[in-house]
Image (cartoon, rainbow, N blue to C red):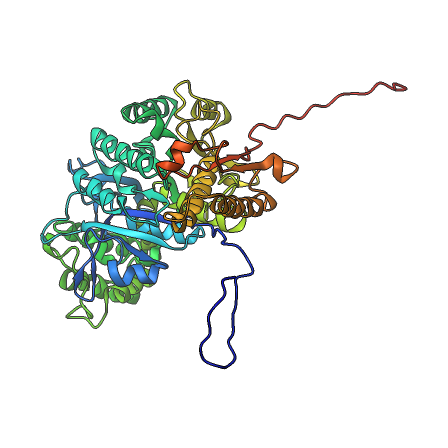
Length: 546
């Protein structure tokens, strides 16, 4: 300790540091979600293109609003559908009544909001939101299109941001084939440049897979889309299949306003009146059923109170629905109370909105596994909250091709197992032919160590390049790695087997390196690899055998 020259009589207190500098591990599970939002404003300031850190859905709602209000209409089964619609399944509003098909008004899928709900329900915490635009973007008569350049711009907004460790762009699956490829490759390239994050990819077209033929065509097409990515970038990417049928959207999130779209309002009113006539037939004396009369009054409110123009579709419902004294939610509950089979229509709508790409859920799984078991553990063999079932059931034979392809672009499956339910059943990167970077947890653990050490060594940028500095640096890194090894993050029966750290003249540096201001630290790690294939060997011992 340096001697201090005191000039005034008195008592002086000195508190020298007892411990050397230490390395604090960086956060490992902070995704950046990029996509479209209902609003993007904070106290009057636009948040479009501004990476914003949040910690809960409440914070998201305050700055970015809620999810996209999907609109539907009913079409009597057998009639031709409009070319700009996506059909849900057929259903009968009531036995004995007309069969209808629930038709979605338009093909847009704004996945960000519900993917974020999956993220938090699966253990997510802090994350960044990048709004590429709002659902209307100044054109209230028509929802905005999801544009490839806006998603790529969203990626650029977070490129130089310190903090995100994962990139998640669920709405990339809505783009055209070649546009999806552009976004996916841009994600991988950014990860390779920054070396501090990974990309969680959804398989394009996975929600449409229905049989073996479409499965292999979809997977082959997905791998072809990534063929333009540099080989060194593939280790930073991980892909998941298939889409997920979730319970994120419930019937309580749907109101009768979701079904009164344009000309479809008349069809809706007619369908409800037909169902009411079947459900509440007149009495034997010909008098109307009182419940039918009450239901007729509620049905009449639909035509008088609900929006019927495209311009009103995304506007929030009025506080009250004139001329009635019921809000949309109250009118919905009144209709269901008097016509219980109506709830089936809401169930179909909620189910169609709850089909989501898996990337949001996997970001939550990564965060949960990191918090509970450490980043060095595989984010696999775990369930997914809110998951009812995968949209396609993958079997063991099919996963062989997904997991060990000849081109190395492994796709991780989410599978259903008897008595265990749906599980994440894969933990490979897109560089699965590499012995070094085959596994997700190996890549992410290496990022964790690299970024933690790099951040700590910034304080030595202008320190003397001498033996005392080298000793301090080696000691600091060894202390950090020892803690990682003790927690199970490195292999080896002893610290010497798990890691080694070298820094010094003659070992990692030459005299020229020192003259040029280069301090070179060599760190060798024994990474933990998973027991991916467990083989049991049973032998039968003969009676009396040794």
